Length: 314
Length: 247
Image (cartoon, rainbow over all chains, first blue to last red; front, side):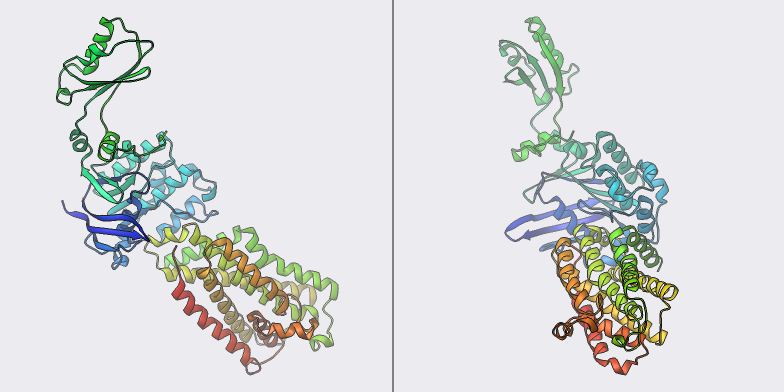
């Protein structure tokens, strides 16, 4: 495996704001590399420096062995780019956009096949401005894949898409990897990063606070499974707290959260059976019981002390 | 080459789908021609040295179209493309920036020429339009005038902060120029004081050059016009090449 992207000591400042602060990382051939973090963490500045759209203040960037600013002409045909903020002329039809952008490249995929995979076939003759936000997004993804690029940049690729469309696009991105291509994406949906990416860099205030596979990032946390349920009325959680496999119990009004100890996750009985047995033996009536596994959201919360985003994705 | 032809053809389609631009380039000049043609006819008049109203209006309205596409159409298109991120998306393809510029010039040139041809056609068919010039000379003058004004449009697009400002500034420059340059109405019917202002408007030189060559004049009678328009073109190309911004 070789490095497709190599970034060393990248910094970028706008006025007094440090957008990206001395970051270094590498992206390997054939992986889906994700950069996650809240809005304003520096994801887009980083991706745009690597795309050659912005000149870094400091640091070196190599993309497929080339300098994205100096060697722009050689590198453009090899890259596919979906920008966070871009448009097409409002009166341009979907097929015209694909046909036009195909003419910019020597080698292209058949766009008819691409729009089949993206569910845009029936929108072929629709003007860009009449497409919904999600359809526009899918068209931009089609344009990014049109030249069968070695490296695809997807900046906030599923923002504004419904869950169904989001899953369809995840499948598409995995297909791209199956064909040996490399994907660099940014997202502020932790679930997306966890389910799609081979490796994830967590960015906060312009710095990489963690970089690993999602599984390793989660395993490094000192948290395990948790059981959440509701009980109406007064009851004492002491019995639960004394269970050997329980680390702590937290009551928030009606809602109770039971945290399991981290070293018991591989036991044959899930922790939830202990909790349910304890509750029923005491005759406590509970509802809305569910278990949660730690996820990237928890990784981010642990590393930064903040939620990655205020609003929910769906 | 394939990219250039495809991009130019796409821009032609987009131009024709934009009702306001297509109207002012192709339809409005014809409406003016029929309006004043109906009022004044095309009888030879001593005011126009023996030519009729329509005879002198066709080159003048051609100048009007050149002003519209250059200062209004091109300026608004480029600044909108920049503001909306349309240029940004093009930038991450292998398409070279000069291809975008050539295509924009080609499209606006073709549409301006189409507007002129419609005027000539209507003049010939309805008003027995008189033409005493040399076709090649008029075509050359048309080309020089168009390119000069397009370069002015590129300069405006480059220096205006956004599409809205570009549109307002374009209108503020264009409309007074339309009426004071002889493009909208003949200079002969304007008072002398107004005609003094005209000397400072570049469109005046387009009108005089086109009308002069149209009525059988020669290039050496129009040295001033040629110098003004060539200078405008050179300065415009220089500034817009320096000031061009993708975003």
